[in-house]
Length: 419
Image 1 (cartoon, rainbow, N blue to C red):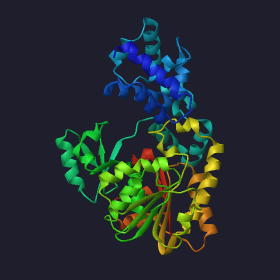
Image 2 (tube, rainbow, N blue to C red):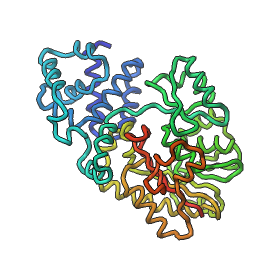
Image 3 (cartoon, one colour):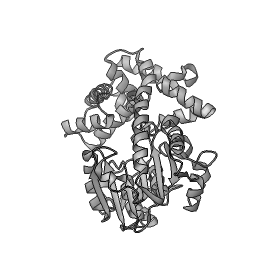
Image 4 (cartoon, rainbow, N blue to C red):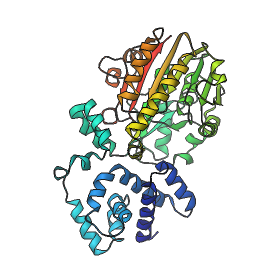
């Protein structure tokens, strides 16, 4: 595609994602369906440009004010993910001069909001938690996330898959904490690999893998992934169970569960039973009361721990939407707790950075359910032989607390109880 045409296409996609009518990934996917002639490199440039604008929206809008032409074009120029020479060939002389002036702006000359690129309510909340550690987090959230894979422990060994990827020209490093994880550079076409086709690998953030590990599902047990979604953690749990026992994948969205079906077929698992439920008090849930060995509640949340992957969330969430989620999280956790049998384990998790969705929910649940005994997550991870487990937890070891800038994972929280 000609440079000018590609820049115009980037501007069009930027305009669409900034409407915030739908999640950015859905907008990008729809754009590609409507423009099937786009090649892989063009798609990558379009998507990364749109995401760069979402990550640094406040800074780019500040810089764009001094330029000329349509706003979306100026933002697309600032976030353009293709080569510099390629971009310059698409610009007129006035735009080139403006872009050079933008490149000379230094961080020290910017307001805080143009450096952290967060809505003020979220920046304030994170500063209160982290103090001086706020800026390392803010900078990490403005960068793309690495690509993590989980090796299917039912069918393959991690080191064997690593060697297989190397033969395919893909460099993979062992993840530092998860025993199933590999971290790779770039975004190679994984779906074309035999390892993907036969179910040896799945894309899954290392933090998400650790939630499945912490659940500690074992052979022959009855387990439920209460908010299974597309089933990433379900598949990890099933592999840990060696495809034995019975593993329920519940979700209120049949559409999300449909995305599990092809992944489940590749995984070779035979113990997974997906089921769409109407709500957390569904009859299917009630019938399992007091029967489950393990219950994982990866609750619906703000998703603010995934801003490297989903930067639009910081502009689509608000304090009001978080409070709505808190009420939902409280109700779901209470309902899920009824499923745990004596001696069983309950895990509550989110991919949020906010205490309202994390520690506050866990502490309120403990106070309301005195028969559920809080477990020390640091000790549990140590028993599971996770390296440097204490670094993954709060200071008292009670909760899992993963941060992008500290652990190179998405932001995750988890609390664990024993019935």
